[in-house]
Image: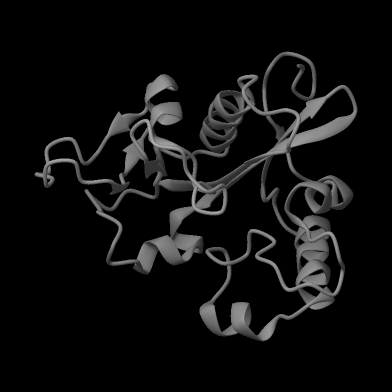
Amino acid sequence: MALWPHDHRGCPASVFEDVRTLVGPKSPESTVCWCLSYRIPSKLNNELRGPARGEYVAELCRTGPPLGVLAYDGAEPVGWAAVAPRADTSFARNRRIHHVDDPPVWSLWCIRVRPGHRKKGISHALITGAVEYARAQGAPAIEAYPLDNGDAKVDLTTAYAGLRKNFERAALSDLDAHRPRALGARGRGAFRS
């Protein structure tokens, strides 16, 4: 596995077709997330349906800063991680996310690895690439909100934010380590680079 461009670094996602391959629907008429749910206001998110969601992402790819990082196997896009300033996402207003302080941190969410490419370290490389990209853009820290599944199998639709063990392997700090949890409790934790 190689990540774009050549040295195991994530590539800022600026090519719409590659983003579509990783987060777009199989049918253009489908209304799927497109990794917009946390990126845009709730009202707009609910209004965008079917092809309008893809058109919105295409416009973001053409005009805005990169939406995240892409991992490649040769020329084939195989992985995606969304990363953006937390203030530009709904995470800034989410009461279920534990906010430690108020620096202009970035949020890392939605880690996607295509079938056939999983269990090859791509998630870890995406996390590392997203952190490096955000830092290069001036982020003082990067937060993530992965699923804490222990050793249990999870449905891939609930694992979109990544798995806790991958963030631990990437050496991000557990912001919730000091918070009491019920014995055996699972859920989302908060991590910071």
